[in-house]
Amino acid sequence: MREAVARPRPADAASLAAWAIAAQVVDPEIPVLTIEDLGVLRSVKVTDDAVGTHTVAVTLTPTYSGCPAMDAMRDDVLEALTSAGYENVSVRLVLSPAWTTDWMSEIGKNKLREYGIAAPTGHSTVRGSGPAGPIRLAMAVKCPRCSSLNTRELAHFGSTSCKSLYECRDCLEPFDYFKVL
Amino acid sequence: MSNSTVNSDSAEADAPAATPEDAHGHVAVDVTTLDAELIEGPSFATPDVAEYALWLGDDSLILAQQLGAWISRAPELEEDVALGNVALDLIGHARSLLHYAGTASDRTEDDLAYWRTEPDFRSLHLVEQPNGDFAHTIARQFIVAHYLFELYSRLRASADATLAAIAAKAVKEVDYHRDHSTQWVLRLAQGTDESRRRMITAFSDLWPYVEEVFRDDPLIDRLEGIAVRPSSLLPAFDAAIAPVLAEAELEVPCGFVASGGGRTGKHSEHLAFLLAEMQVLTRAHPGASW
Image (cartoon, rainbow over all chains, first blue to last red; front, side):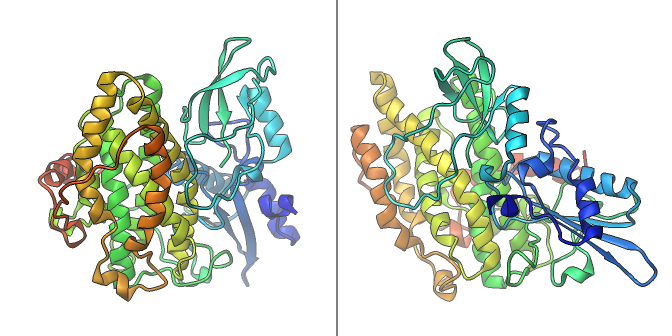
């Protein structure tokens, strides 16, 4: 169920073929992850007109509102489909439904760990308003190098919008954590 | 670039066409061009909705511009990064909101950010207040983040689908901002005598500007079900900050209330200087791209 929401692959063969091409575009900041792994690729639709021109409409959703990598991903999708021979390619960004780390594929999470970035732990919660209190209960984040759970957060905000900075208290190395959103 | 264009095709109904190849180079302007299959409702704002989107967009834009000034000057490298990230999220919200506001008057987000003058901005006096010392920035951030969290939580249910979509995206990011400023309020208030003194001073300097945040305006009456009534947020805001201030052993400052007026274009003395810095490059080199 979650997988169908995260990766809404088109049903018809023509659109699915275009999806497979767009799905190979990677995140320029984290090049081991494709936009399909991330759940950023939201829809691909191929329509043929009377003279046989393939029109492809692609929609992507941003991970974070201000993520500068979105422009690059959009250009890369356009480039990939154009090079594959599609003539009328349009790429649009949509905000709804809002992206969540829950959409990241298991394959993507494994690739992230191998790359040295801790994958998001647990699921995004729908938090109501009202007093939250200053302290959060957080799951331990596993060090991607030595797998120790003895780690601590150095900073909520890291090298990109989607990451926070951690330190492993056993191997003493700092590492990025792809935080739950 | 190929011949293909990155814009909405006519088959996708009423979405405004974006033109990334225009004078603004690759600065994308169609972030909120919402997919008709994913969301229903008009993609063009009415004049009243556009005005409301300006309120919220200008708050985020001005605050983001302020936070950018901390890069390389925060108390530690991690904090440079944190404030930079918060600013980036706010810029993202501002882009979406200003883009949407611009659909009512055929202006782009850049037109609105760079080519309006002071009386046309709708930002709150709170976000215009100077960065001050780090405690002032944190106090301002604490107030704004808690306000925005309550606002966007409710705006998710707006009858305006575009505003609801922007809010649903923003609320998750603002939640992190809320945590960040809360941790710093606790740390500064419970730190050294000096940090505590500065935190107290910062709250008393900024509190006069809180009243304007929750002030209603005739515009809100016209946007029933679309906008969130600012005064309705106050109980939740008070309830959210009370436990933090209690733990920090800080009192809610009382005293005079500033005049406000940002929503009608009457600004404090600080905004014009901020705009001059923010807009100078675009105005010196109209249409430049990089």
